[in-house]
Length: 109
Image 1 (cartoon, one colour):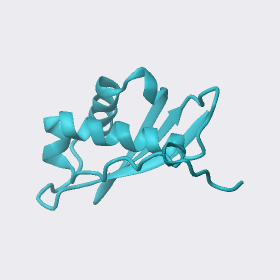
Image 2 (cartoon, rainbow, N blue to C red):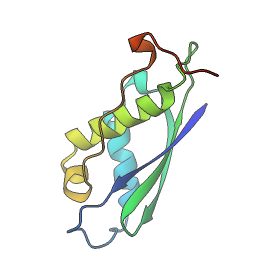
Image 3 (cartoon, rainbow, N blue to C red):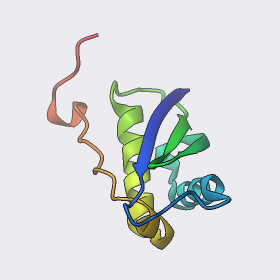
Image 4 (tube, rainbow, N blue to C red):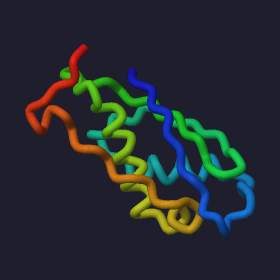
């Protein structure tokens, strides 16, 4: 199991976290998760300027060294792109980085 910490930054116009914010964000992630994301569990904690997320992802049989971060970033990016609620409340996250294996390079271990 891989655990990835990520966050979404609040838009400046959003004052404070509404009641149930964490559940709404987690629901949006589950709504846009695909089997390739390998999402197993997600939790979150609101902060004054962002929401922090912990994403628990099943490790694939043939893991990519950057795979968990890439899959988590893709899920958060895709969820933000598709969810009007996330778009209103949070700034867009950066797109997922390309896989190092896709370019024929591999990080030293």
